Structure formats: structure tokens, C-alpha cells
Length: 143
Image (cartoon, rainbow, N blue to C red; front, side, top):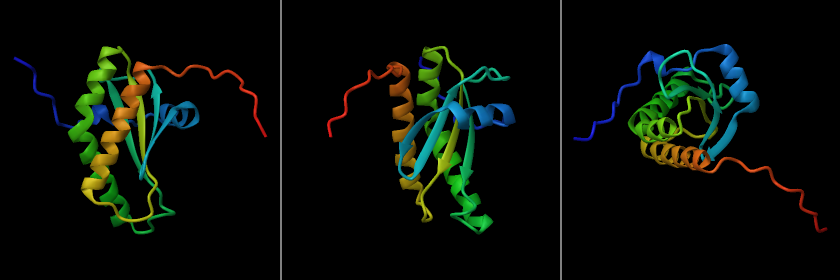
């Protein structure tokens, strides 16, 4: 009988390490699915979880804390409902990941919009796991 995925979002799955957050921003792979951007980095996490996430919304774009908090709640909920597909892929590749989810839109989103963007982001992360980045050969520029 297949095991049902866990839809919880415990503290152990939240990214809190300052060093790991800075490393993810500095050297992590970037994935885009408007209005979300994700930075992802293979890392050794202190917990026995496939992935730790951080959710971020710009104070410059949303002055009111209630708006920022609402967007972060929507993002965490969308991640919580869809993370099992990403976790399955991470576990198959025996990797632990640090993921920073960033909202870059300018308007208040709907949950449906965030959810579809999150699906796209997760699909792109899984795709990148399957086909690691190949160094691109220098191609001559025509111009």
C-alpha cells in the first residue's frame, strides 16, 4: 500500500542557518516562475529532512506588514501542499537542499496563482536534478 505524503510543515523543514541562507543566495541555482523565484543549493542540513525552505517578500514592494505576511502565508501553504513531489525527487537523488522562495511580483496574489507558480518551480527544480547543468562551450557571437 503506498504511503500517503505528509502535508505538515514542521520547524525542522524551515531554513534558519544564516551561513546556509547566505550561501544559497550567493551560489544557488535560480529558478523562475512568475511571480516566484527560487534559489536552490545542495547542502548538508543539520536535520534529517530532504529540504529546508525560507520564504521571503520584499519590504520595498509591500510596505504593509500585513500584505507581506499574507503573501508569505500563501507561499508556505502552496509549498506545503506540493512539497512531496520535490521531496520524492530529492530523496531519489540522495540530496538535501536549501531552498529560498522569493515573491517578486508587485500586486497581491491569489492562492491559485501562487499554487500554479509553485508547481512550475518545483517541476523546474526536479528537471534540473535529472539533468545537471552542463558547462556551456564558448560559442562565437554573430554580430
